[in-house]
Length: 195
Image 1 (cartoon, one colour):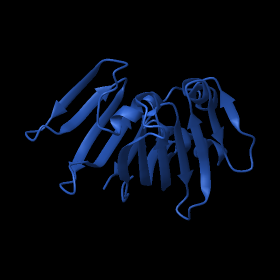
Image 2 (cartoon, helix red, strand yellow):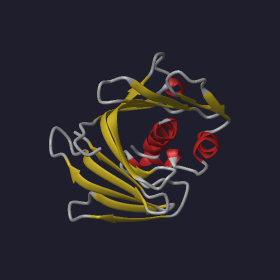
Image 3 (cartoon, one colour):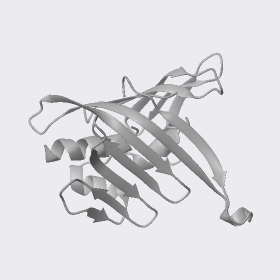
């Protein structure tokens, strides 16, 4: 059970839901009015579905709710089961990353990449996910992208991940509604639906 919770937690950071409702908002926050103190905040709330293989190579599906909060320096992801009990809390900052699981000591590493590698044994693209949710290709590596006739981003192929934007909302503004992420080498599939 511990392995599946950790896999679920870290897989979601790598994007994050079929049958999901996700709310996206971006706002600029400033306490002093000074340009240096301004930061952009992104929040996403919703439910997720993750399909993966466990250590015995059995197919598994996990689902629940999540809250994503991101400012210029930190990403905080809280994963909840369908009854809103905490499965995991992941915090990724510029100098430290942590993973908290219920009834266990927090795991800490200098970076989210190192935390994932030490916890899972492989790397998941947390830093890229923050761009894929907006929807943008990460500026940190080469990506192939495609758009539709309305100039909506429809697909990103980057770092072994395939990100498909399956639907956009029309109102009140044009935002992502459904995202499907797959990583064939990891046999991992994550589906998200956004409002």
